[in-house]
Amino acid sequence: MTSRRQSVSALFALLLAFSAAPALAEAAAPAAAPNGVSLELNTLEPRGQNCAVNMVFGTGDDAYQSFKLDLVFFGTDGAIRKRLAVDAAPLRARKTSVKAFEVSGLACDAIGSVLVNDVLDCRTEAGAVADCIDRVETRSRLPVALMR
Image (cartoon, rainbow, N blue to C red; front, side, top):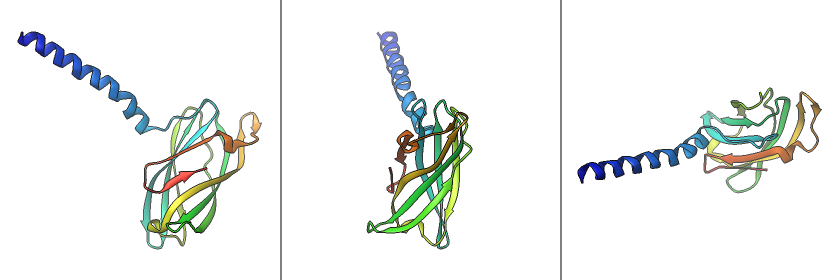
């Protein structure tokens, strides 16, 4: 009886481990649609009166030679505090990358949300991509929302 109970316990533990594996993989790297780009707001690091922003990018089948974002930073009161153009290229195909940039004159604790307002320049090996904003999926690991 003990042997059977141990076998059932081992089988349950194995099933639990397999069911958790996809969630762990998803937590490590944001998935992108086949031609899309996933953006994750990962950390905000205070640097005096500035804020260092770390974003995780995940790509599908396309590599991007140019991927310039128009980001709008809203305060905790909902008012626009800063607008910034950020070039995240190059982005390799089927690759997770971390891009870091600094927002000057804006403290991290003053940021309530971040809007990907537009993709200003978007080019793959095939050339310019129209309506690239439609390829973007956003998420945030922070209480600060990242939206499009």
